[in-house]
Length: 216
Image (cartoon, rainbow, N blue to C red; front, side, top):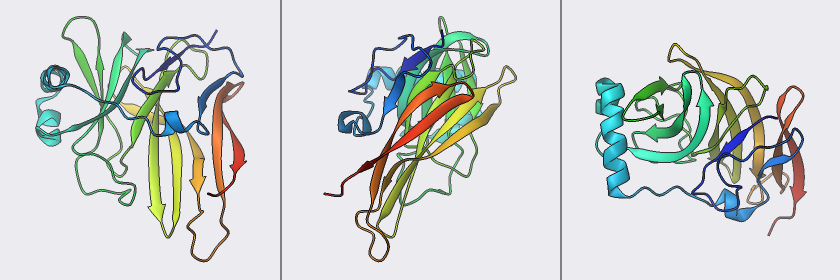
């Protein structure tokens, strides 16, 4: 059975580590509790993560700065064993700025004790949240699911990137599910429309089914 580990601080999700059968809904973007959920980390957690980040890569720790943003976490089984993965950026994302001028975001995987491994993400994208770690191809290793949003001319879209973590420390995009949310209700000239997806694991990986929603 394929496995899905959810970000436990987001409302509207199953508990982390829950096993999911192929075809069951993993993420439901119609659920406003899920789409509006944000991770929160107390200062002791931030200090611990900052120390792990510095241990894994002093250069990345300098790039992220002291006020870095932690944008979610999930438990999973990755290239080098079980652990917890965190999405870290130098600052909080803004949907109106999809291509920021700043250091590349990173994924930090912590294992048993104080060990940690760093994975650098592409420098030309920023992410809103880490929403899950899931095994989409049945190989026993989890991919990391990251949201990227963009707002322009009255239209907001969200894509879901599926990131595979390799043993050599590289993070490779394995799949992109486009428009898991689309809100064009404020479109000044084109069609006013809105939709949200449910995400499942299918025979070929992650699949998104779009559902039309009314504009307010």
